[in-house]
Image (tube, rainbow, N blue to C red; front, top):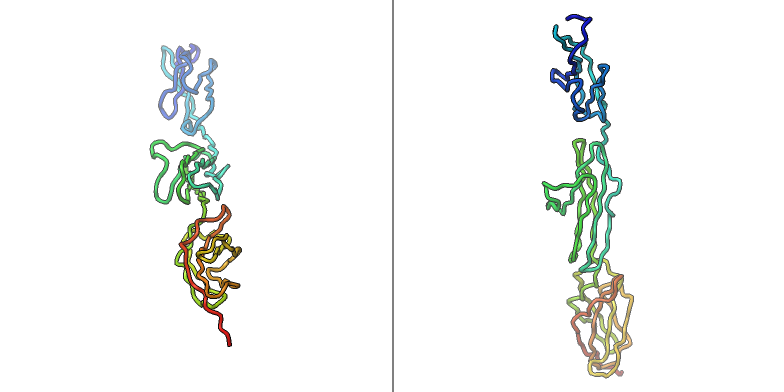
Length: 261
């Protein structure tokens, strides 16, 4: 090649693939400078490779010595910048938004699951942030936020706890009846977060308000100071942080007679 004759064309090649010619418009993020330089803006991992400059004129073609470009990529596994709240208490029938935000490099995809059920469509998994909307909540459940990228996967669980009044106690039974006392036992099959029980009672046919014993923390109790030979009706009520639930079915019994010796 005649080195005294300026090249009429020049371009760069990456791994034997031409990038562009000198006087063509700027293409993507490669830009050939007028003095034979190559500028790469916002370099990417795929830009890594071997580059050479190719000069051409009417005499021939000349290749520069190839040079290798290494692109250092910052890689960070997924991590939660704002995980979902671990415990979320709501009233029965309420709505709730569960938010989950994760970061990393590359940015992770974020999805929600309920047990083995995917709640985020597989073809529409958002990147970095996912908000799960739960309308008209009827029961407590656990929801899992999963953030995943090519560098790994992390999980965080949010428990949605429905707050409601306790159920009515069941299977009320009366035993150990004396003239002035009776023993009550009962069962409870609702949620375990109870505070205490209440017993209400009064003579069955009396036109008066119920007497009440509150703060009972066992599922049995001996009611004392009753009147002899009187028919009573008894109700048991469970109490939690929301309030009192419905009463049990009434249970009746007649106290014994007073014995005189």
